[in-house]
Image 1 (tube, rainbow, N blue to C red):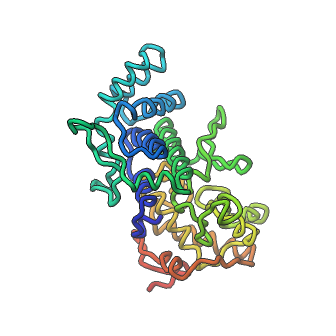
Image 2: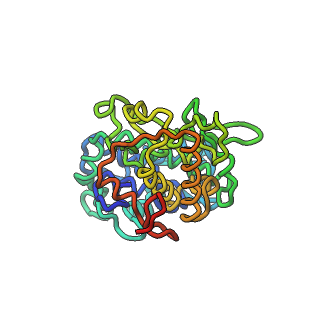
Image 3: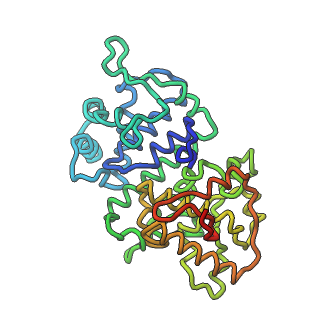
Length: 359
């Protein structure tokens, strides 16, 4: 992810705010979505009275979808949203309570990363301004809302939201979600599978796109219709074809082995593994997901290992076995600077190439 590599842009910091960090409630997702939506109008000032209807609407919709939207049992603002959904609270009263209760913490908390102010500011808090109270929307937010990234950012927020609420509903603090969240190749969705039913949680593209900054995993180009001829394609790093061979490694039809690529790279790669020099990119991506406290954290750890060293060993063994069964490999067109970023230091493992040679 660009922000974690030291690239500070309005887009990379927004993704870091939404995609990283622990969540105790889903207010951040609703606030970010409402804020970005408001910015598309080009307005530079918005009052809480103007922001409240959409903010409350998003949370009411979320409660209809999944009753648990925070880690605690109750909350005065969410109780108001529940009352509205039940028909016990008028819309005007909901908006009044949203203004009074709903923004209490989220406005201050949203632009924070790791307990410190984010390096990009999207708005100025003028709630206590005597003549024009509200939020001043800065150019960074307005430009972001007009950019080609805006639709993807909105989808990524929604995907993270679905995964967080699903984790809370199923008790992901243990390993409850891990074996039950599976990839459905036909729909390209992550599906929660229980004894009773299968329920779609979110699309894989939206769930993974932010961790690739909207760029192809193999060539680093933005995956837009204009740049690559299509949107992102869900790609198996170690080919799905391995499942038709004597494959005894980890399930290749699982999140740890899924990335997003552009159509030209997908077509060129075909049923081949990428060259081993590329593989640390996948290792880093999986570690990024885990370190972000992502709801897929437990899924990935179950699939590949509890520690960075264990995950490295799992990935290396899987790659070696895959290239024994399917020896032909494909070399992605990654620039040297991008490739250098793959040789990194993570947790227990020293800085190393994927072939295991320490530097």
